[in-house]
Figure 1 (cartoon, each protein chain N blue to C red):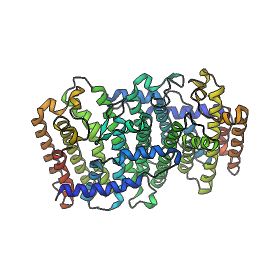
Figure 2: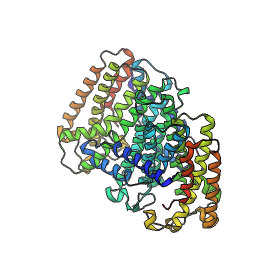
Figure 3: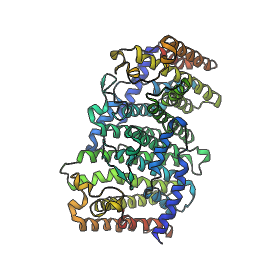
Figure 4: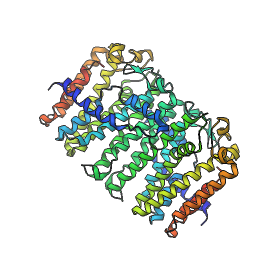
Amino acid sequence: MNIQDYLKQQQERIDQFLDQVVPPGHILAKTLYESMRYSLLGGGKRIRPILTLAAAEAIGSKNNGVLPYAAALELIHTYSLVHDDLPAMDNDDYRRGRPTNHKVYGDGLAILSGDALLTMAFELCSQPASESPIPAERQIQIISEVALGAGHDGMVGGQVMDIQAENQDIDLLTLQTIHNYKTGKLIRSAVRVGGIWAGATSTQLERLTGYAEDIGLAFQIADDVLNMTGTREELGKDAGTDAKRGKKTYPSFYGIDGARELAAECISRALRRLEDFDEQAEPLRALANYVIQRRN
Amino acid sequence: MNIQDYLKQQQERIDQFLDQVVPPGHILAKTLYESMRYSLLGGGKRIRPILTLAAAEAIGSKNNGVLPYAAALELIHTYSLVHDDLPAMDNDDYRRGRPTNHKVYGDGLAILSGDALLTMAFELCSQPASESPIPAERQIQIISEVALGAGHDGMVGGQVMDIQAENQDIDLLTLQTIHNYKTGKLIRSAVRVGGIWAGATSTQLERLTGYAEDIGLAFQIADDVLNMTGTREELGKDAGTDAKRGKKTYPSFYGIDGARELAAECISRALRRLEDFDEQAEPLRALANYVIQRRN
């Protein structure tokens, strides 16, 4: 399959859904909606929701019903970027080639827009059971999965670890833990949500989870490499920021070539996890390879 | 019934639950847990979760099973205070008689702790259906209720309205709308969650909703009055801050006495909504009166 065509198609499907997800809302809070839409529709790669769709497809469902849950993961990813870019955190001025949310709307609005995007993720996941094509029990399981991947023992926990490790001489195990929490756990949830939605058996879900953990690690290693080798134009944000901040990265332990090799090993392992899946898992397989070949 | 005894008893019940809710977690994110606990266990009045418990009781259930949902509302209230106090928002140094979260842990950690508290609210609401004493459909309805009350079209929307109205010459209708979103909607959700949990009929839920809207308004009017008449010792935070910021309040439209009268009218209306409820609604009735008699 052609991964570029597949990505483009799925991105459009997700973008179309996301475009309708934030309603114009109350006139007195107009800026909130503008600010939410500014970051949500700012042209992300949509990796996490695409993983959700691809995981559901691997289990046998290409149904649109999974879109709200896939979108929820993108809302959470977006909120984390908005908060991460704040002066009190990474203090980044550019994101996806445009000024960051707080640069346009101010710090207060950026904090609140992030809060609203996070909350809306759970609004999307809790559509009335009567309108949902899956059993309510499964819906609860998905919500739990999203909350765990995003929260104190997931992504947010990882961001705190990351802040505390800045300018510290951390070892490789610590680096891996930070990345696992900061990036890995939400990617893991994205894949598992697709699987749960489509009714994966416990064996299937276990394999999907392993796949997600492997590509999550590869994704982060590739990110570290891109931060060193990419240009500002390719990345849509400042390049070389990790080194400037004195952050330890995979290349600082393994060198650039060593890090690339390690990422490739993760991808091989991820593909082996899918050996028992049929051709419906082709998108998942193609995504694994894409993760380390991408330019941004 | 003695409202002070009732409040103390329920506060202890909730505080005990909240104390166990934030686990020590990963050693690398230790500060996150400290910061979450600092704000969560800082001695709040627990009005929202107590309303949830009292609403469940009014429908006939005194069961502990509602505690995770009641706690979720307190987590959301707490996160909103942590974010609200940030320099980028209200820039408050004191809360409940202690330095605010960002004063102790820094702005970055305060943002992330708020994010984690909000996410944890949904973790609490999505406990496995197999361990839940209520049907999964009802659990979904509760999660939706919480997300709607807290998000873009609820509390966060209200905070945005509030920011945008600062130093504006707003009219009474605008003031009411802001307060309804900023404070009323989450109080409404707190009451409704208790009702839904306990299996309220649609008529009962409608009456509980009316009750909640009435006391929500009274609560905010009383808050405005307290901000003008209370001392720093009573409030546990700076007094007279609204006037200093040039914020329009109920007393600025009605005067202090007029505002107090208006709050009392809201409470009478709230009590009439409960006319058809039996003695199990006594806590709800007592809470209505407490809302306008409190000193902080």
